[in-house]
Image (cartoon, rainbow, N blue to C red; front, side, top):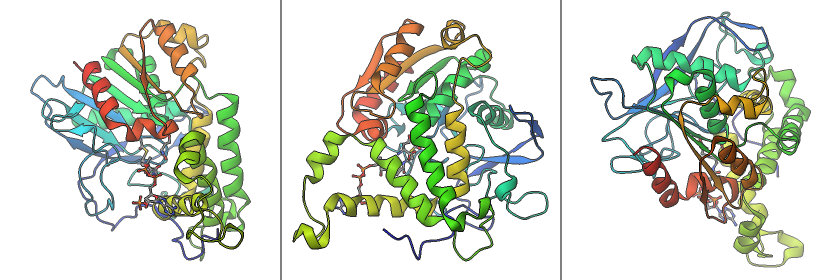
Length: 370
Ligand SMILES: CC(=O)SCCNC(=O)CCNC(=O)[C@H](O)C(C)(C)COP(=O)(O)OP(=O)(O)OC[C@H]1O[C@@H](n2cnc3c(N)ncnc32)[C@H](O)[C@@H]1OP(=O)(O)O
Ligand SMILES: N[C@@H](CCO)C(=O)O
């Protein structure tokens, strides 16, 4: 299970290939907890064209480990294809022949946006000095991208999981700027179960001696073992027990003796976790996971029901029937409170169903954007 030999941080660094990323400067901002964030930027990518009326812009928001590369092939700076390349593109659910699609890397991220691995004013990584964020801070930062592009309002804000948290917050905090909100695989607030699951992941990273209180960037090794454990925990919550059991059963690593070589499911976890650890920064993992724990659309708004009653955007609420992390009843409650039908993705793939069930997601998105 050792992650020895992995990179200290998978964060994007100045000098790495920029690819199609562009950058929006964020003016100094006051974070929700009162801390000042002096200077920051968001990396973003766009597809399609903003029309002369500037009314065809769609903001797509990624989940915790995603980035700005929502569509297209692998390219310099992005070793894999876009994380929703089956959903965003010409003729797809978010049709880039019609829509001007914008996808920013979240504040606190590690793929070009300012986050713990990025240089602070003294040119050293923020590390332990990085301020705690809320989901509302992420949304406040994203307004800089709209300003940079001259987008006054979004025809739609679309996101799943942590992206869905931000889509909800965009619609509630800036109602005049969001015409449609498409919210997938999330609820109105982080539940105790979700907070607990996130907290043990943070604990695993912080318990790694190479975490160094968040100031590991100059050291020989980052907290790769802690992050590998965190991602194992997370990945299991992203998939369903039914899928894992039916895919792997008691199959062994190499088809031989289970008493000597262990199980195929362990080898799968090793593989998917190594991918994440190599491309992602532990400081960002902690910062964004903590931000997800703050998710609560009702905070300061008289509770979730009161908040939702003020929604002006046309909502589409989508859940995955086998999601054990953000279970379907949470989307059912959102849909009921908003008075819209719940859209259900049928899948064995659990929470990740919103990423992989592209046919169903395309159909729902095409309808939501019609
Ligand atoms: C909205 C967002 O922004 S999220 C951002 C995108 N998310 C991520 O990138 C998170 C990490 N990735 C994932 O969670 C997943 O890859 C998904 C959800 C995107 C796609 O899931 P799937 O295609 O079902 O991948 P799955 O979990 O089956 O893993 C397949 C990999 O495991 C490997 N694998 C399968 N069985 C085994 C095994 N027994 N031993 C070792 N490796 C195995 C496959 O070869 C494949 O490898 P590859 O990805 O290098 O080609
Ligand atoms: N697999 C996705 C789902 C999280 O919601 C991710 O890693 O971001």
